[in-house]
Image (cartoon, rainbow, N blue to C red):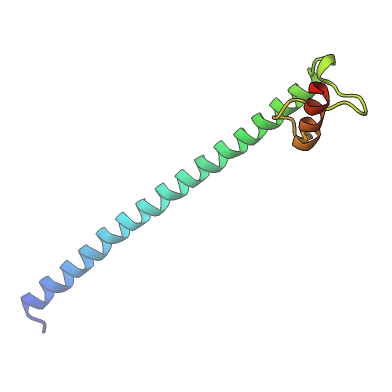
Length: 94
């Protein structure tokens, strides 16, 4: 039969294993919750950005809408062409 020292060692190892398992499971579940919250936030942010773009497109003032041959002067516009803008400014200054 095993001595008391060996039994104490076995029960200590078992207890340490259980405590480590609880700690590890808690850290895994908390990181999963954080990842889910981050995914949800990024999804909401993407929807907000899309809504802002659609709103800006819908409510664009008539003076900002460009006809063919005119230069877009807003640098935040996705169709902004720096070379065309600089050529237009150079032509105006002549």
